[in-house]
Length: 280
Ligand SMILES: Nc1ncnc2c1ncn2[C@@H]1O[C@H](COP(=O)(O)OP(=O)(O)OP(=O)(O)O)[C@@H](O)[C@H]1O
Image (tube, rainbow, N blue to C red; front, side, top):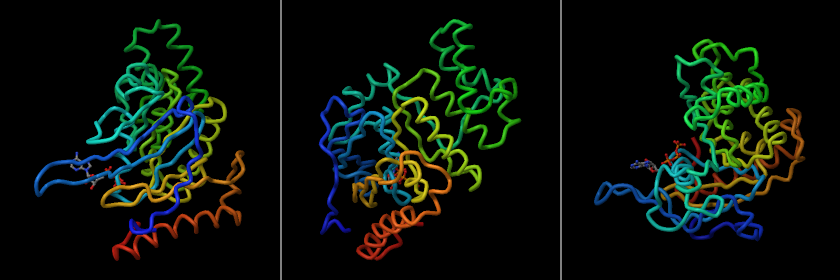
């Protein structure tokens, strides 16, 4: 759907106390003069506690910019962002969220265990407590027997599991993930997607997940926010009406294919309207 005929945006009315993330008419403009880029224009959406929400869209539509706003790595030009009813800066200081980036960014000279324990160490957590928490998290991500290995001894998928465990170390209610699986092969990617859903079930965390993969967004999410580019805007918001318990077989079902078609059509409309490829 084009900016001339905006898609209906289906947002359930949620009391503000239940909005873990509240993005309200946010615009972001980078640079000035002839270098000026409007990365986001009047973007509004929320994420409720316990939801898994994906930001989906073509390269350059502003997905990472949105995640950075929520993570207090960037300020909006106009509009407001609230996380747990507070400014992102306060939310960060209160450790309301953990972040996982596309590249794991682990410290090569620290063991896996000590990478996971780093945020706890920085807070002065007693040794025994660090150990108890890292034991739990390494078990959660299936890396108990690699605790004393170093990052360079692990595969890319295992390294990304470590960065998920590290993001969970301070037990934040919210995980922000910026294309965490996009550098991995298809098999590892699908395995980690299943594991992430298992982590969501066992921890009850809330997720804001950036991806440009339609099947990934559908498999993982409760809701998908489709963004259009130039400038980045909310194109449409889709509830994913698939079973809460998701297994690999789901990817082969009619309902899954149908959802892929629905979302792909959003991008075809966008491309037809602008006459440029909408999705790389
Ligand atoms: N620091 C910056 N200075 C200038 N322009 C920027 C800056 N950061 C992002 N942009 C521009 O803002 C737009 C949105 O970028 P962003 O990285 O958020 O998109 P994206 O959807 O995450 O893309 P990708 O999927 O390729 O990572 C792009 O046009 C980008 O070039």
